[in-house]
Image 1: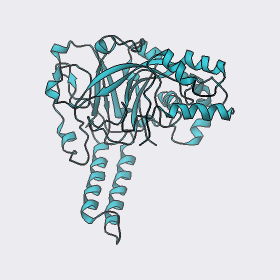
Image 2: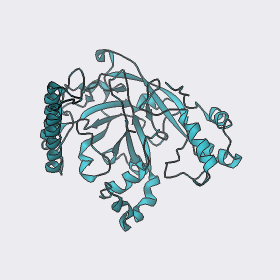
Image 3: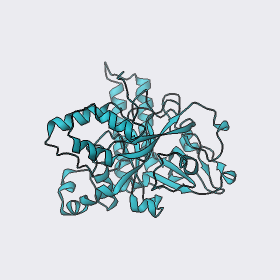
Image 4: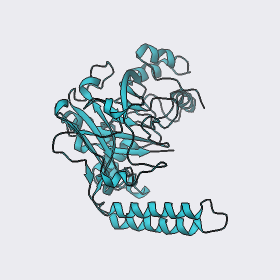
Length: 354
């Protein structure tokens, strides 16, 4: 396992770290100026009954206002196409398991095929979303690295269609998540029971219901990534600088790795793929980004300059305490003006994996 360096705690630590790589002084100055504070969120194993109502946690059961049901999504707008794909996969898995030398036993084939058929049924109907976590902004805002654009009261709660792994690049998938901002007093909250539809899909090997893992926060300073829409520290054709900087950033790891704290509030993300902001920009305006043609269209070219307006709100990665598996990570992005307007209904969730 590679050694992972913690993100720098402040500007001096970031400056010292950048001194280790061969970059011009003006580039270093720009990187220091662009760095954003953030909170890295560490988790621990715990019994959920010991976690106070409204407290920050990854997984578990959400603490909701009185009378609010566990959030669901409607049937996907393209449910027929999605369901047909899952049923074809179910047939393929069953047939594959019966072949000589298959990587599956017939029993496994039956199970995997049944799982695919369950996914087909789920996309065609209203279905509960998986709870990824809740974040007590009033408490977290006491930390120096708290993102000043976020509200300093209430909680953010993130729900996502973990069963379908709702993709970020099609408008139809936008029903597959909900990000809520709730200011209900903690004493009035109620811990919601897990919906039967989610619990019935979970077993010892795979689950849509994660364990509750309480969160503690520490302040860091996050360096900008070369994939950020606001990147301007050096030109990409400067191969020496590009390679040096990418090698340096790789020291901090990615949010799907063992041995690091993978969750983060604010700052720059540790992305696993490029184009996250641009995809948010295009899909939020109704463009399907699933093909190259969409990116080259006049509509896309007109919209792409606004990609820099999107910024990370939350990053939720693999977590052994909550049972969130590898690979990949979940990123909540919003435009800064939407955060200021408290329009968390306009947040977008992106799942990435290598």
